[in-house]
Amino acid sequence: MKQLREIFGYLLGFIMFILGIPAIMWLASGCPEIAFTCSWNSIVGVIIGLAGLILSIWTIVYMKVVGRGNPMDAFDHEIAPHTQHLMTGGVYRICRNPMLLGTFLYLAGIALILLSWQSAVVWIAFVIIMSFQVASEEKRLERDFGQEYLDYKKRTGRFTPW
Image 1 (cartoon, rainbow, N blue to C red):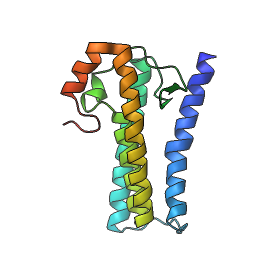
Image 2: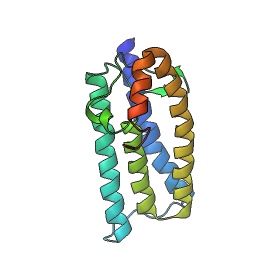
Image 3: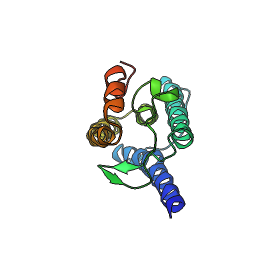
C-alpha cells in the first residue's frame, strides 16, 4: 500500500506540475501554436525551464534517498508517505523548498516561451497558492521535527538562499 501511495504521489505531482500548470498557461494564453524559435524569450525560457526541472528532479531523488519519503503533501493532507528525516544537507542547503523553487523556475521558463501576460498571471497565482501550501507544510514540519526544524528555518530561506 505504501508503494502504491508513493507511485500515486509522484504521478500526481508530474501531472499537476509538469503537465497541468503549463497546459493551463497555454490555454490562458489563447492556445498559441507551439514552435521553438531562436528568439531571446524561447532560448532563455528553455534554459530556465531545464534548470528548474533539474533542480526539482535532484530534490525528489535526494528526498527519496535521504529523507526516505515523498514530497506530495497538500495543505496538511498526506497524499504519499512523509519524509522520515529532516533534510538540511545537499540541495536543501540552497533553500528549504528546492523542489518548489525548481518548479517555479520551470514554469517561469514556460511563461517566457509563451510570452503572454496571461501565462504570467497563472505563474503568479501558482506562486501565491504554493506559498500558502508551504506555510501549512512548515507547521507540520515544526510539529514533526521541533527545534531542529526551527533552527534550520532560521538559517535557510524559504525559496531562496537568503
